[in-house]
Length: 222
Image (tube, rainbow, N blue to C red; front, side, top):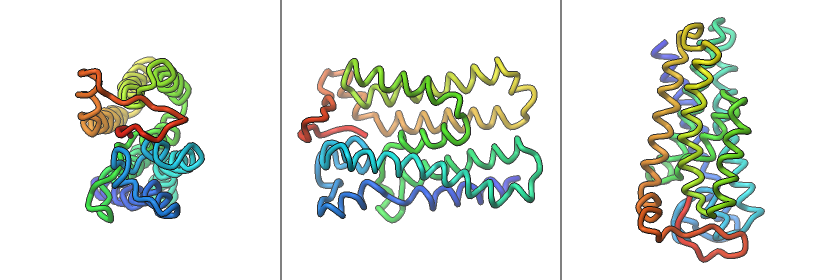
């Protein structure tokens, strides 16, 4: 299924190139690339434009991966009967959306950090992981007010859950594609952490900015 994998990635990449934060900013006559952290993701939208626009950006970025997985399913479900193979192609589609979000060619390959779009992948492919991820992320951000820390730990927790559920549910034995799916999730987590590398350095040095729902002066984040 090499061709099918590539097609699924391409479908996802096209879906991911819808740079919602940038477009929403333009509707408000603001360029997120030139304000705050310069990032087009949810957190910078929050800091520059406020909560309502951040929520819209978040939902759009999450939906990109869900849409990609759905389109891939629609393309291949009538041609491939193996449900496990369908799920594999869907995760390739969702992963493509993350890549399109992170490296959109329409923005000179400068996009977001992939957390919200990876959340869409989680909802589409691993829905039972959602609530644990939500508790981890929201809990850490509420306690520390560091979105970057919550994002990084949530990514690591996602990988851990996929591995644990794989062993507990016997998926590594029953699903011939589950190891490949785990590798994809781990690769996306590693990519997101890499894109957060400047945040990691600031966290280690104690200079990372904290999120505030009442201020738009912070300069770094998703």
